[in-house]
Length: 130
Ligand SMILES: Cc1cc2nc3c(=O)[nH]c(=O)nc-3n(C[C@H](O)[C@H](O)[C@H](O)COP(=O)(O)O)c2cc1C
Image: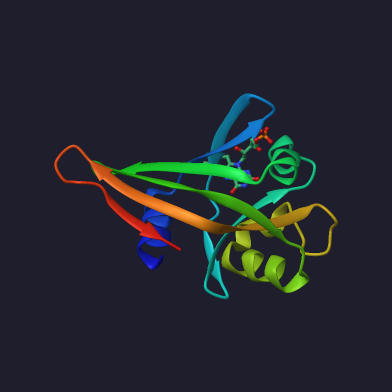
């Protein structure tokens, strides 16, 4: 899992796909943080992405860097604990300009039953489950 987080951090940007009814939705994301051994992302409750994840937690992210791409498919489950949100904001201090752990908007989700696949044009895919 550390390898997955390292890749996401180095890539800087990944794309998060969610489902809305029968319509896929995708957008750029950057937050990737390990808390209590799980991979967390951050968003705001006011965003459609948040509402989509609450309605259907199935999600997939994709990032590309240095000829290799990573896809992580799984379920993104909300962690409603204050300490989980605080840990995220400590890891991303720049977010504090827009978010506070107790603002009623900040929200964090962690991956459950995740399958991460590293792919390239030159090597066989490598799969990591966490
Ligand atoms: C490089 C980059 C990184 C971003 N990272 C995040 C993020 O980690 N969390 C977040 O909620 N929004 C992030 N955003 C903003 C979302 O992409 C944006 O709010 C998007 O509209 C959310 O999707 P939605 O409109 O379907 O809710 C980022 C945007 C960019 C350009």
